[in-house]
Length: 356
Image (cartoon, rainbow, N blue to C red; front, side):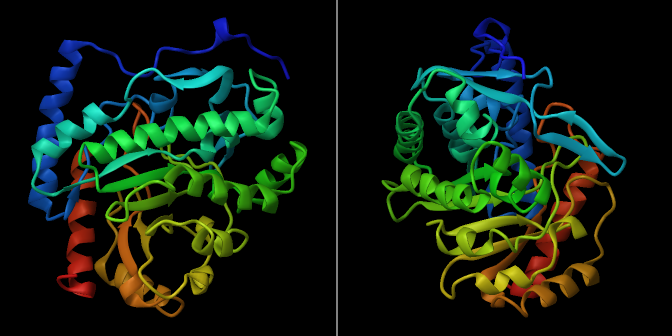
Protein backbone atom coordinates (compact mmCIF):
# COMPACT_ATOMS: atom_id res chain seq x y z
CA UNK A 1 0.00 0.00 0.00
CA UNK A 2 1.41 3.39 -0.97
CA UNK A 3 2.07 5.65 1.99
CA UNK A 4 1.01 9.23 1.40
CA UNK A 5 2.92 11.98 3.15
CA UNK A 6 1.20 14.77 5.09
CA UNK A 7 1.48 17.13 2.13
CA UNK A 8 -0.81 14.83 0.14
CA UNK A 9 -3.49 14.59 2.79
CA UNK A 10 -6.67 16.64 2.90
CA UNK A 11 -6.60 19.39 5.54
CA UNK A 12 -9.52 21.43 4.17
CA UNK A 13 -12.10 20.30 6.70
CA UNK A 14 -12.60 21.62 10.22
CA UNK A 15 -13.72 25.01 11.50
CA UNK A 16 -13.88 27.42 8.55
CA UNK A 17 -14.10 30.83 10.23
CA UNK A 18 -16.04 32.28 7.28
CA UNK A 19 -18.54 34.85 8.55
CA UNK A 20 -20.73 34.79 5.44
CA UNK A 21 -20.98 31.01 5.49
CA UNK A 22 -21.71 31.06 9.23
CA UNK A 23 -24.61 33.46 8.63
CA UNK A 24 -26.09 31.12 6.02
CA UNK A 25 -25.67 28.16 8.37
CA UNK A 26 -27.36 30.08 11.19
CA UNK A 27 -30.37 30.92 9.02
CA UNK A 28 -30.93 27.35 7.90
CA UNK A 29 -30.35 25.85 11.34
CA UNK A 30 -32.99 28.15 12.84
CA UNK A 31 -35.46 27.00 10.18
CA UNK A 32 -34.50 23.37 10.77
CA UNK A 33 -34.99 23.64 14.53
CA UNK A 34 -38.39 25.30 14.08
CA UNK A 35 -39.49 22.45 11.86
CA UNK A 36 -38.34 19.86 14.39
CA UNK A 37 -40.46 21.63 16.97
CA UNK A 38 -43.48 21.61 14.64
CA UNK A 39 -43.07 17.91 13.89
CA UNK A 40 -43.28 17.16 17.61
CA UNK A 41 -39.79 15.94 18.46
CA UNK A 42 -38.66 16.17 22.08
CA UNK A 43 -35.04 16.91 21.26
CA UNK A 44 -33.44 18.87 18.44
CA UNK A 45 -30.18 18.80 16.53
CA UNK A 46 -28.65 21.34 14.18
CA UNK A 47 -28.73 18.70 11.46
CA UNK A 48 -24.92 18.83 11.41
CA UNK A 49 -25.41 21.58 8.82
CA UNK A 50 -22.06 23.13 9.74
CA UNK A 51 -20.21 19.93 8.79
CA UNK A 52 -19.04 18.76 5.42
CA UNK A 53 -18.26 15.32 6.83
CA UNK A 54 -20.00 13.75 9.80
CA UNK A 55 -16.72 12.49 11.29
CA UNK A 56 -13.80 14.26 9.62
CA UNK A 57 -15.03 17.69 10.64
CA UNK A 58 -14.11 16.93 14.25
CA UNK A 59 -10.77 15.28 13.55
CA UNK A 60 -9.56 17.88 11.08
CA UNK A 61 -9.98 20.60 13.70
CA UNK A 62 -7.28 18.86 15.77
CA UNK A 63 -3.53 18.80 15.21
CA UNK A 64 -1.92 15.55 14.15
CA UNK A 65 -4.76 14.18 12.02
CA UNK A 66 -5.26 14.35 8.27
CA UNK A 67 -7.15 12.31 5.71
CA UNK A 68 -6.44 10.56 2.44
CA UNK A 69 -9.65 10.91 0.44
CA UNK A 70 -8.24 9.42 -2.78
CA UNK A 71 -9.35 5.83 -2.24
CA UNK A 72 -6.43 4.35 -0.31
CA UNK A 73 -8.53 2.33 2.16
CA UNK A 74 -9.55 -1.28 2.81
CA UNK A 75 -13.04 -0.27 3.97
CA UNK A 76 -15.42 0.39 1.09
CA UNK A 77 -18.88 1.66 0.24
CA UNK A 78 -21.31 -0.75 -1.39
CA UNK A 79 -24.51 -0.66 -3.36
CA UNK A 80 -26.74 -3.56 -4.31
CA UNK A 81 -24.47 -4.00 -7.35
CA UNK A 82 -21.33 -4.42 -5.22
CA UNK A 83 -18.45 -2.27 -3.97
CA UNK A 84 -18.37 1.29 -5.26
CA UNK A 85 -15.58 3.33 -3.65
CA UNK A 86 -13.27 3.17 -0.61
CA UNK A 87 -13.73 5.12 2.63
CA UNK A 88 -11.57 8.09 3.52
CA UNK A 89 -8.42 6.97 5.35
CA UNK A 90 -7.49 8.72 8.60
CA UNK A 91 -3.76 9.40 9.06
CA UNK A 92 -2.02 10.28 12.30
CA UNK A 93 0.76 12.59 11.13
CA UNK A 94 1.75 14.06 14.51
CA UNK A 95 0.79 14.12 18.18
CA UNK A 96 -3.01 14.48 18.54
CA UNK A 97 -3.81 17.84 20.13
CA UNK A 98 -6.91 20.03 20.17
CA UNK A 99 -6.31 23.44 18.60
CA UNK A 100 -9.72 24.83 19.57
CA UNK A 101 -13.17 23.63 20.62
CA UNK A 102 -14.60 21.93 17.54
CA UNK A 103 -18.26 21.56 18.53
CA UNK A 104 -18.97 23.92 21.45
CA UNK A 105 -19.87 27.00 19.39
CA UNK A 106 -22.23 25.01 17.19
CA UNK A 107 -23.86 23.49 20.29
CA UNK A 108 -24.23 26.88 21.99
CA UNK A 109 -26.10 28.24 18.96
CA UNK A 110 -28.46 25.24 19.01
CA UNK A 111 -28.95 25.52 22.78
CA UNK A 112 -30.06 29.14 22.45
CA UNK A 113 -32.30 28.42 19.45
CA UNK A 114 -34.76 25.96 20.99
CA UNK A 115 -36.73 25.00 24.08
CA UNK A 116 -36.32 21.35 23.14
CA UNK A 117 -33.47 19.28 24.56
CA UNK A 118 -30.45 20.23 22.42
CA UNK A 119 -28.73 17.08 21.20
CA UNK A 120 -25.11 17.15 20.12
CA UNK A 121 -23.50 14.46 17.98
CA UNK A 122 -19.83 13.66 17.49
CA UNK A 123 -17.74 10.90 15.92
CA UNK A 124 -16.94 8.02 18.24
CA UNK A 125 -13.30 7.73 19.35
CA UNK A 126 -13.01 4.19 18.01
CA UNK A 127 -13.31 5.54 14.45
CA UNK A 128 -9.78 6.94 14.69
CA UNK A 129 -8.57 3.37 14.98
CA UNK A 130 -10.96 1.65 12.55
CA UNK A 131 -10.67 4.31 9.84
CA UNK A 132 -6.95 4.61 10.49
CA UNK A 133 -6.17 1.02 9.55
CA UNK A 134 -6.11 -0.48 13.02
CA UNK A 135 -2.93 -0.95 15.06
CA UNK A 136 -0.86 -1.39 11.93
CA UNK A 137 -2.22 1.76 10.33
CA UNK A 138 -1.71 3.89 13.43
CA UNK A 139 1.90 2.74 13.67
CA UNK A 140 2.49 3.75 10.05
CA UNK A 141 2.04 7.35 11.17
CA UNK A 142 3.48 9.44 13.98
CA UNK A 143 3.12 7.05 16.92
CA UNK A 144 5.36 4.10 17.66
CA UNK A 145 3.46 3.35 20.88
CA UNK A 146 -0.27 2.52 20.73
CA UNK A 147 -0.82 3.39 24.40
CA UNK A 148 0.53 6.88 23.73
CA UNK A 149 -1.81 7.23 20.74
CA UNK A 150 -4.84 6.24 22.79
CA UNK A 151 -3.80 8.48 25.69
CA UNK A 152 -3.59 11.52 23.41
CA UNK A 153 -6.83 10.68 21.61
CA UNK A 154 -8.65 10.14 24.89
CA UNK A 155 -7.37 13.43 26.31
CA UNK A 156 -8.61 15.30 23.22
CA UNK A 157 -12.04 13.70 23.47
CA UNK A 158 -12.34 14.31 27.21
CA UNK A 159 -11.50 17.98 26.73
CA UNK A 160 -14.00 18.31 23.87
CA UNK A 161 -16.78 16.66 25.90
CA UNK A 162 -15.95 18.62 29.06
CA UNK A 163 -16.39 21.90 27.20
CA UNK A 164 -19.72 20.72 25.79
CA UNK A 165 -20.92 19.78 29.26
CA UNK A 166 -19.75 23.14 30.59
CA UNK A 167 -21.79 24.81 27.84
CA UNK A 168 -24.91 22.97 28.99
CA UNK A 169 -24.93 19.80 26.87
CA UNK A 170 -26.87 17.04 28.61
CA UNK A 171 -27.46 14.76 25.62
CA UNK A 172 -24.40 13.63 23.66
CA UNK A 173 -24.40 10.98 20.95
CA UNK A 174 -21.25 9.17 19.80
CA UNK A 175 -21.70 8.20 16.15
CA UNK A 176 -19.93 5.15 14.81
CA UNK A 177 -19.90 2.33 12.30
CA UNK A 178 -16.97 0.49 13.87
CA UNK A 179 -18.80 -2.06 16.00
CA UNK A 180 -21.43 -2.63 13.31
CA UNK A 181 -18.64 -3.31 10.82
CA UNK A 182 -17.40 -6.04 13.15
CA UNK A 183 -20.72 -7.78 12.45
CA UNK A 184 -19.60 -8.31 8.85
CA UNK A 185 -17.43 -11.41 8.15
CA UNK A 186 -15.53 -9.51 5.45
CA UNK A 187 -14.44 -6.77 7.83
CA UNK A 188 -13.63 -9.25 10.56
CA UNK A 189 -11.17 -10.67 8.06
CA UNK A 190 -9.81 -7.16 7.43
CA UNK A 191 -9.14 -6.81 11.17
CA UNK A 192 -7.40 -10.18 11.20
CA UNK A 193 -5.25 -8.85 8.37
CA UNK A 194 -4.25 -6.03 10.71
CA UNK A 195 -2.91 -8.70 13.07
CA UNK A 196 -5.73 -8.60 15.62
CA UNK A 197 -8.59 -10.85 16.69
CA UNK A 198 -11.85 -8.97 15.93
CA UNK A 199 -13.39 -9.97 19.28
CA UNK A 200 -10.37 -8.55 21.11
CA UNK A 201 -10.71 -5.32 19.10
CA UNK A 202 -14.42 -5.19 19.98
CA UNK A 203 -13.67 -5.44 23.70
CA UNK A 204 -10.94 -2.84 23.37
CA UNK A 205 -13.35 -0.48 21.59
CA UNK A 206 -15.80 -0.79 24.50
CA UNK A 207 -13.02 0.12 26.92
CA UNK A 208 -11.86 3.07 24.82
CA UNK A 209 -15.38 4.53 24.71
CA UNK A 210 -15.65 4.08 28.48
CA UNK A 211 -12.32 5.87 28.98
CA UNK A 212 -13.52 8.85 26.96
CA UNK A 213 -16.78 9.26 28.91
CA UNK A 214 -15.43 8.27 32.34
CA UNK A 215 -15.55 11.83 33.70
CA UNK A 216 -18.98 12.78 32.30
CA UNK A 217 -21.39 13.84 35.08
CA UNK A 218 -24.28 11.46 35.80
CA UNK A 219 -26.92 13.97 34.63
CA UNK A 220 -25.51 13.83 31.07
CA UNK A 221 -27.10 11.21 28.82
CA UNK A 222 -24.63 9.45 26.51
CA UNK A 223 -25.79 7.33 23.60
CA UNK A 224 -24.02 5.39 20.85
CA UNK A 225 -25.21 5.21 17.26
CA UNK A 226 -24.10 2.17 15.24
CA UNK A 227 -25.02 1.65 11.61
CA UNK A 228 -23.53 -0.06 8.57
CA UNK A 229 -22.78 3.10 6.64
CA UNK A 230 -25.01 5.76 5.12
CA UNK A 231 -23.92 7.81 2.13
CA UNK A 232 -25.77 8.64 -1.09
CA UNK A 233 -28.01 5.62 -0.50
CA UNK A 234 -25.01 3.32 -0.14
CA UNK A 235 -23.98 1.14 2.78
CA UNK A 236 -20.66 -0.31 3.90
CA UNK A 237 -21.33 -3.51 5.81
CA UNK A 238 -23.90 -6.17 6.56
CA UNK A 239 -24.54 -8.80 9.18
CA UNK A 240 -26.66 -9.09 12.31
CA UNK A 241 -25.62 -7.77 15.73
CA UNK A 242 -25.01 -11.28 17.10
CA UNK A 243 -21.16 -11.05 17.16
CA UNK A 244 -21.13 -7.74 19.04
CA UNK A 245 -24.34 -7.59 21.11
CA UNK A 246 -23.00 -8.93 24.40
CA UNK A 247 -20.16 -6.40 24.48
CA UNK A 248 -22.17 -3.55 22.99
CA UNK A 249 -25.01 -3.81 25.48
CA UNK A 250 -23.13 -4.88 28.60
CA UNK A 251 -19.57 -3.54 28.35
CA UNK A 252 -20.21 -0.05 26.95
CA UNK A 253 -21.24 2.29 29.79
CA UNK A 254 -23.81 4.40 27.95
CA UNK A 255 -27.48 5.15 28.46
CA UNK A 256 -28.77 4.09 25.07
CA UNK A 257 -28.15 2.83 21.56
CA UNK A 258 -29.37 3.93 18.15
CA UNK A 259 -29.26 0.80 15.98
CA UNK A 260 -29.84 0.35 12.26
CA UNK A 261 -32.78 -1.97 11.60
CA UNK A 262 -34.32 -0.76 8.33
CA UNK A 263 -33.20 -3.67 6.12
CA UNK A 264 -32.37 -7.36 6.39
CA UNK A 265 -28.68 -6.36 6.40
CA UNK A 266 -29.02 -5.67 10.12
CA UNK A 267 -30.24 -9.17 10.94
CA UNK A 268 -32.93 -10.13 13.43
CA UNK A 269 -34.05 -8.64 16.72
CA UNK A 270 -32.83 -11.69 18.65
CA UNK A 271 -29.57 -10.03 19.85
CA UNK A 272 -31.77 -7.60 21.83
CA UNK A 273 -32.23 -10.40 24.36
CA UNK A 274 -28.76 -9.46 25.65
CA UNK A 275 -29.83 -5.94 26.58
CA UNK A 276 -29.64 -5.80 30.40
CA UNK A 277 -32.86 -5.13 32.26
CA UNK A 278 -32.92 -1.59 33.60
CA UNK A 279 -32.71 1.90 32.16
CA UNK A 280 -30.75 1.35 28.95
CA UNK A 281 -32.80 2.05 25.82
CA UNK A 282 -32.41 0.78 22.25
CA UNK A 283 -33.79 3.05 19.55
CA UNK A 284 -34.90 0.81 16.69
CA UNK A 285 -33.77 2.42 13.44
CA UNK A 286 -36.71 1.06 11.45
CA UNK A 287 -37.26 4.13 9.28
CA UNK A 288 -34.83 4.32 6.38
CA UNK A 289 -32.86 7.47 5.68
CA UNK A 290 -31.68 6.00 2.36
CA UNK A 291 -34.95 5.83 0.43
CA UNK A 292 -37.99 8.10 -0.09
CA UNK A 293 -40.43 5.24 0.54
CA UNK A 294 -42.54 6.13 3.59
CA UNK A 295 -42.88 3.25 6.02
CA UNK A 296 -46.44 2.13 6.78
CA UNK A 297 -47.60 2.61 10.41
CA UNK A 298 -48.83 -0.97 10.68
CA UNK A 299 -45.50 -2.32 9.47
CA UNK A 300 -43.61 -0.23 12.03
CA UNK A 301 -45.92 -1.29 14.86
CA UNK A 302 -45.54 -4.94 13.83
CA UNK A 303 -41.76 -4.73 13.87
CA UNK A 304 -41.75 -2.97 17.25
CA UNK A 305 -43.92 -5.80 18.58
CA UNK A 306 -41.45 -8.33 17.18
CA UNK A 307 -38.56 -6.55 18.90
CA UNK A 308 -40.48 -6.49 22.18
CA UNK A 309 -40.33 -10.30 22.24
CA UNK A 310 -36.62 -9.95 23.01
CA UNK A 311 -36.41 -6.71 25.05
CA UNK A 312 -38.98 -4.93 27.24
CA UNK A 313 -41.11 -2.44 25.34
CA UNK A 314 -40.24 0.29 27.85
CA UNK A 315 -36.57 -0.15 26.90
CA UNK A 316 -37.29 0.32 23.20
CA UNK A 317 -37.92 3.40 21.08
CA UNK A 318 -38.34 4.27 17.39
CA UNK A 319 -36.10 6.35 15.15
CA UNK A 320 -34.55 6.65 11.71
CA UNK A 321 -31.83 4.27 10.59
CA UNK A 322 -29.25 7.09 10.46
CA UNK A 323 -29.03 10.76 9.55
CA UNK A 324 -30.68 11.91 6.35
CA UNK A 325 -27.40 13.22 4.92
CA UNK A 326 -24.04 12.08 6.25
CA UNK A 327 -22.13 14.04 3.61
CA UNK A 328 -22.72 17.08 1.44
CA UNK A 329 -24.13 14.91 -1.35
CA UNK A 330 -26.92 13.62 0.87
CA UNK A 331 -29.15 10.64 0.18
CA UNK A 332 -31.67 9.92 -2.61
CA UNK A 333 -34.69 11.47 -0.90
CA UNK A 334 -36.10 14.98 -0.63
CA UNK A 335 -36.45 17.30 2.33
CA UNK A 336 -40.20 16.70 2.25
CA UNK A 337 -39.57 12.95 2.38
CA UNK A 338 -37.44 13.53 5.47
CA UNK A 339 -40.13 15.47 7.32
CA UNK A 340 -42.81 12.92 6.43
CA UNK A 341 -40.64 10.19 7.87
CA UNK A 342 -40.01 12.12 11.09
CA UNK A 343 -43.73 12.84 11.42
CA UNK A 344 -44.42 9.13 10.94
CA UNK A 345 -41.93 8.31 13.71
CA UNK A 346 -43.64 10.73 16.11
CA UNK A 347 -47.12 9.41 15.26
CA UNK A 348 -46.21 5.76 15.65
CA UNK A 349 -44.14 6.32 18.80
CA UNK A 350 -47.06 8.22 20.36
CA UNK A 351 -49.43 5.38 19.47
CA UNK A 352 -47.12 2.73 20.93
CA UNK A 353 -45.65 4.47 23.98
CA UNK A 354 -48.14 7.26 24.64
CA UNK A 355 -46.66 10.28 26.40
CA UNK A 356 -43.44 8.53 27.47
